[in-house]
Structure formats: C-alpha cells, structure tokens
Amino acid sequence: MSSVTDRLIQGSMWLSLSRAIVNGLSALSTFVLAWYLVPADFGLVAIATTIQVILSSVTELSLNQALIRHESPSETHFSAVWTLSVTRSAVLALLFAAASYPIAEFYNEPRLTSVMLALSFSLLLSGLANPRRVMLQRDLIFWQEFVLNVSQKLVGFVVTVAIAAIYQSYWALVIGTLAYQVTNIIVSYTVLPFWPRITFRHAREATAPLNQTIYPGFSKVRNDPVRLIAAYQRAQALLAAVALPAGIGMAVVADPMMRLALGEKWVPAIFIVQALASVFALQTLGSLVQPLGMAKGHTKMLFIRDTQMLVVRVPIIIAGLMMAGLPGVVYARVLTGLISTVVNMLLVKRLINLPFFQQLAANFRALASVAVMAAGVWGLSHVLNTPTDKLALALHLAILVVTGGILYVGSSCVLWLAMKKPNGPETEVQRIVVKFLSKAKRIAVPKSA
Image (cartoon, rainbow, N blue to C red; front, side, top):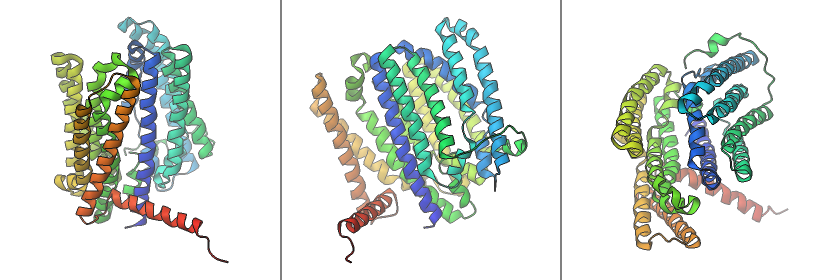
C-alpha cells in the first residue's frame, strides 16, 4: 500500500487517540461538575452556547479548507485567512453581545446577559487562532494536531473543575470555555510560529467554496479510484473499530456508571446517554463522507445533503417534542441520526462507486464484535444485579467494562483469523506490536562489539 495510505492510517490512529482522550476528559468533566453544579446551571449555559453554535455554523467561511486546497499558500495567504477570521469573529462577538439582553428578557433569566457577554469574548478569541495549524492536516502531520487538541482540552478541564470545586458556580463552565480558547491560541502559535498581519489580499481565493482529518490525504489520491477506495475503507474501518465499542460500550454500562458518578438524582437521564451514545457510535459508519466529498470537489453535493437533512431533522424533532416531550426529542435524534448515516453511506457510493453493503462489509468484524460485547455485558449486568453500595457499584462497573473489552477484542481476533487475516484495523495493530517487539528486542539484546 502507498505511503500516503499508510500515513492516513497513522493519522487516523493519532486522531482516534486524540478523540478518545478528549471525549474521556469531557465525560469525566461532566461527572465531576454534576457533584458541584445543579441541572439549572447546565441549562443556563446551554442556552447561550446553543445560540453561539448556531450563529457560528451559519456563518462558517471554510477558510481552512481553502488553505488545504491551495497548491502553495504563502505567508500572505495565511495573513489573509487570519484577517478574515478575526473580522468574522469580531462581528459575531458584537452581534452576540448585543443580543444578550433581549435574549435574557425573552427567557426571563437575568444571569443570561452576563453569560452571553462573557461568551462573546470567546467568539472573538476563536478567530485569533493560528491559521497555519491547518497545514498539519495537509501534510498529514497528526502528532502535533494531537498535542494541540489534547492540551487545550486538558487546560479547559482543569480550569472548569477547579472553579466548580471552589465556587460551585455556573461560571466554571463559562471560564473553562475561555481557558480552552486561550490555550488554543497560545499552543497553536508555539507549535507553529507565525506573525500575522492585517491584509485582505487573496481574500477572494480564501473564501472560494471548498473536513478535517482525512480530507488532505484523500485529496492526494482522489484521481486514483482504486487507491482512493482502499484508503477510504481502511480509514473508515479503523475509525469504526475504535468508535463503535466506545459508544456502544458507554451505552451498555450507562446505568451503573451514572449511578456511581452522578448519584441517584441523575437516573432519569440514563436513557439519554444510552440512546445518544449508541447513535453517535453508529454514525461513524458514514462520518468520512465530508472529507471525501471535499477531496473530490463535490461541495455542492455536501451542501444539498446538509440542507435536506435540516429539512428532515427539524419537523421530526418538533414532532417528537410535541408527542413525548424530552424522551420524544431523544428518540427523534436517534431516528435522524440513523437516517443521516444511511444518507452519508449512499453519498459515498455516488462519490467513489463503493456499494452500500460493501461499506458495511468493511466494518463487519467491528459490528459483529460490538454485538457480541453488548449482548454479553447486558446479560452479565442482569445476572449480577446492580448494587447500591458505592464500592460494590464501582467493582460491578469494573467487571462489566473488563468483560466488554475481553469480548470485543476476543471476537475481533477470532473473526479476523477465521477470515484469513484480511487487511484492517487488526493488521495495523499487529504491525505496531511487531515493531514494538522488534525495538524491545534490540534494546534487550545489544549488538556485540
């Protein structure tokens, strides 16, 4: 296999590790904050951040994709992107701040004004990040991307938890967000030194229509259909092999995990974790259509997909809310997530002529192993029953997690051997183990003089 494909696989592994750590810190942060904050605190900040996300998403300029697509971006191109990013974030920050009081009045929540004013500063900070960071993706240098992602999440986690523990205030969530953005700025310029200057030269090139991760690698093999299909299947299989057990595993142990971490008051939210963790895991099966479409230049197709899914998603969620309240919204989200997965896989078929069931076949071992894991852990949890004592509950959870890991890894290995060791995630793991053992052997047995 080509070196580009190999680097894609290595990049997928770095990014999978990064996402695992970031998601782990997010989950741990949620559990810790639940001890110090009340649900109303989360709801208050959620209103502001939801509005912030919507405002940011509808004004996205795709500047990073423009830099990746450019054959040889110069310092002026980077400065132009930085200028446009700062201009956009400044305008959004002003709009967000101006809307703080009217929105607070609408929700009859005076605290929302100060929260939105603080988060408007977060919007401004988001535009100051180093635009050269995107070149790490273009050149398939993912270890530095790992450092950037993990460091900013770690700082945000420490700040949020520390303030929550000391002051027990919703401001922990707000200041943690600001710390995350500041760390992003500092680390991005430390890893990739760059001194931006204000310029609108090349701004038109930067705003040309043009996701992260695999897009730059796919763009290198986009004119070779055979290599592109192989690269897509290997990258997709590796991501699924990591995301499926993580998401489904979270769902099957959600009951004891939330009882142990958050207490009995959060028991009604268990089904939400179970439903959303499962659908997020399954959505991995079509998650690489975005970078694939970018690499192939089919941005119009992606835009049409997003528009169609918006038209489908909104009425389903509204109907769920009207018929069943919060549970209805959750079930609607699961349904729309499954629809989105099928749509994405059908788009992959259109982009690279890879049949739907062939895409599923590439993930067969992960899907089958996850099914074995889920069935085994679910059955064991019902045989053991959930204890109420904290220590016993922790032991119960540990037994379920270890059992799930053994079942998943064991099933994957058995299926891989039964299928005569086809290329896939197991191959990559085997290669890493062989390299590690080889290096360890050379260290243990030095060459004779």
